[in-house]
Image (cartoon, rainbow over all chains, first blue to last red; front, side, top):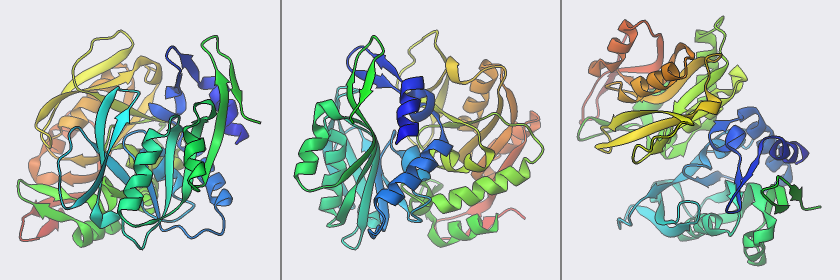
Length: 191
Length: 191
């Protein structure tokens, strides 16, 4: 998506430790109009697929998923983050390692809101090593839901987390795929 | 807002400890189409006011604010939650006590995204004792921004947190004002 790539070049900041800060429009300040156009793009990319629910993860996926869901006309469920695993019969839960915060976390979804009848589109802000996306896939699988695919805003394609998920047969539509980036400010995209 | 009141009566669950669970459409599963109509309602209520930015707080305010911002055509900034106060020159921060989680937290906003030029509409999901809304008001004041008012989805009017904020001259538009609720399932609204 040309508009998203241009916005990353304009407002993204590459920080030490292979971090792309997009606090200007995606992770602290939010640009809902952009998220809506991202939703329209995913809607077009997944045209013809039946989707009953959008799944994302707290905190950073919530804004994108909530706005981008509008063209789909379906509810969003966001997996909640818990600091410690607290086994309960009422929830599906998976452990995930956060590389950003260097900690283990548990993602959980109430069984009420994800079921075998659901056809799920996963939406998230970033895809790097794939830990978060894999956790969301596992939650959908635990619920017995059908996974239609995943829409990602920014994929660090050079980290190959997306490749291993695509090899499992899961379709991923990333709107900006970063081929390389460095602190001197250079960001290049795939294609 | 009649639609929101009806949705609370249909899907809200009153739990022990004066808790209203609206996980079905507001705090776990989300109904973006409803949030959009809430945005249109706030837009109509604040018609004629110049608004340059919408401010909310992580986590539960993000979805409502991001979607409801669309009719306003302005960016959203969400205050991030930090577990401990970590003084930095780059952020405005306030301490807030979370009654839901019974812990002290710090809310912070980068100085980049809130300035004296901003005319701020605060949006949030709940208003009970007013702790969260007061924290957001303090953040806007620290930035020297002008506060146009606040839009709240659900106000527990019987807790009077809103009254003390209104007495300071801050306009609050709550879309559903609960007069009373009890575990037997009874919820009544103001008016």
